[in-house]
Image (cartoon, rainbow, N blue to C red; front, top):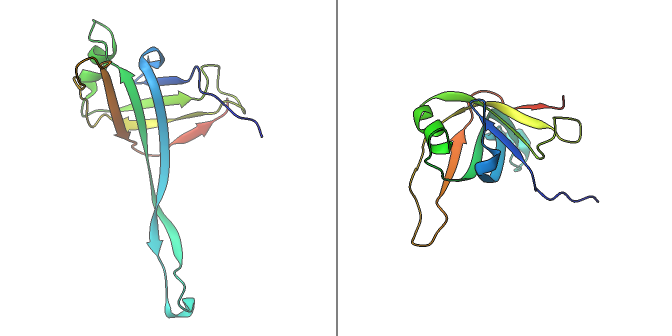
Length: 136
């Protein structure tokens, strides 16, 4: 079984390539579990999928210089913007799919950490609409 090590992942938010500030990416998609158990279920729980939702989690290394990550993200607070991520920074393909859609910039924590820490920003943005997987 092949293994993959994330070395050069790719992330864009609102058309801005933030890969050079990002050290962790996580795309999550899930579906609500709806209980459809009846007496005919003979004592076994039965479920079906309901509404789907997703999120984009990331850890960014903070940079407050003009045109860098804090200056790009701060004005997006409260906005729904496009995003795209790939396991590798090469073009999307069958072996390097892109996952994208829209997300709500729900929270931005420009300052977090303790003495001696690298200044990072941990985020989790809910998606708005479908997460699309593309291979081209």
